[in-house]
Image 1 (tube, rainbow, N blue to C red):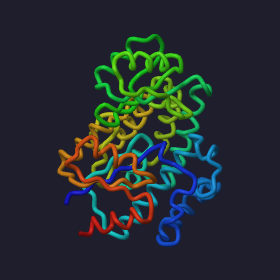
Image 2 (tube, rainbow, N blue to C red; image 1 turned 180 degrees about the horizontal axis):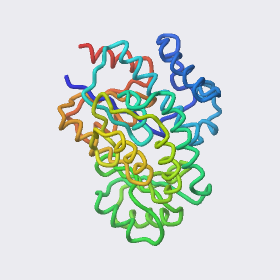
Image 3 (cartoon, rainbow, N blue to C red; image 1 turned 30 degrees about the vertical axis):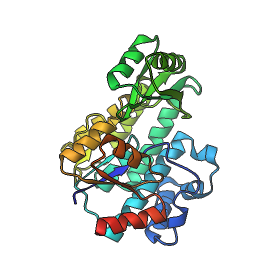
Length: 309
């Protein structure tokens, strides 16, 4: 069965993630130790022991989630001889996908996403931005809602049909929440995130990221990596960098990525990372796709068995 790997972004992190895998899967511990060495501080201790509010800071969450995704993907490849037809990630997870596809080294990606997190955190003063989940409206209706209110607010994550996240200035997002409810949204609620990601407010972060990517060593990916901004892979390194920069200020088109993977023949998707958010989204996007998570040791072992069967 054709296989695709998907990698989660921020929101799936929690203190203690990967703890049950450390003894059973030595490659997981080795990967976390490698991350500590690359960053020069105890990321593994933060992942395993917290505190939660520190792990939840964007500059820490991003390298933590990348390290977790890489650790699980490495363990999966070792246990099941995984050879995916293509890979994709959600927001930050796109970097994890690029590491797995050998388009960028693990060390370089860790440093890049830490800078990305710092730049995103600093782009907007704390409390001035907001993100919100809108459930029960189609994409066109949500776009119309965003356009109907004053200020900066725009679609940020197309997560599943009828499930879109918006992002922008706090007041504009709050107005959009009320407008969405008036349009018949089943739910419209602010999210507990520290930055208004994937909005034009992230332009200063995009500029800093562009400079960092220009100095980084990127290579052609060993397998198709479907990028968030257009659900397409690319053959040229310069184009990879441009898409990563655009991703900071443009929406994550996860629905399109999943559908593009299916169009490439993928029938089974495995989420490499803590939690199972993307697994749930895949099932909502297309019930004909098999979706597996492997963020705990038990789920990992079941995924390995399924892949080997």
